[in-house]
Structures are given as C-alpha cells and as structure tokens.
Length: 98
Image 1 (cartoon, rainbow, N blue to C red):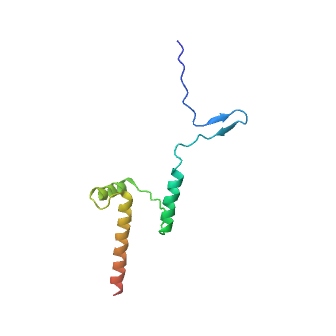
Image 2: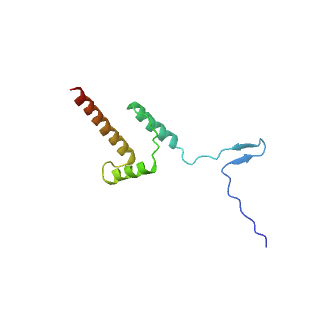
Image 3: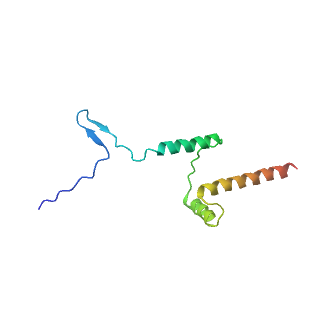
C-alpha cells in the first residue's frame, strides 16, 4: 500500500503565467488602523514607543511587583518604577544643593 502525504496548504499562491507570488489576503483588516490610532494618541501626548529587553531575573522581579499589586501590568510597573526612581533622584539632588 502506498501512503500519500498531503501537503500543507500554501500561505501564498503562485500565478503560473507571471511566476510571481501573490500574497494571501489578511484576515484582520483593522490592525493597521488600530496601531495607527494608538501611535497617534501616543504622539499627541508627547510619548514614543520604547522597546525594553528584560533578562530572566529582571522579568521575575517585574512579575513579583505585578503580583504584589505594585502595578496592574508589566508595562505599568516599568513606568511606575521609573517615575519613582526619577522622583528619588530629583529629591536627592535638591537635598544635596541645600
């Protein structure tokens, strides 16, 4: 008995006449609009997206902060910790000048 393996459906189809690959139509047509709206609101508020690479040990600390109720999410924990660290630095600088 000969077994025939079925090929997985291709993500794109080949147009045999021109031998070019036509991209498969996306199912989510609103993601670009949502991303654009989000980035627009961020820019209006003077913000900018920032990528932060976090090592395993730091990620554990971040998750512990979220678990302890310091912040509702990792992103908010980063923002809140940064604001608090900045406030401490400003306070220290003011105390050093007095």
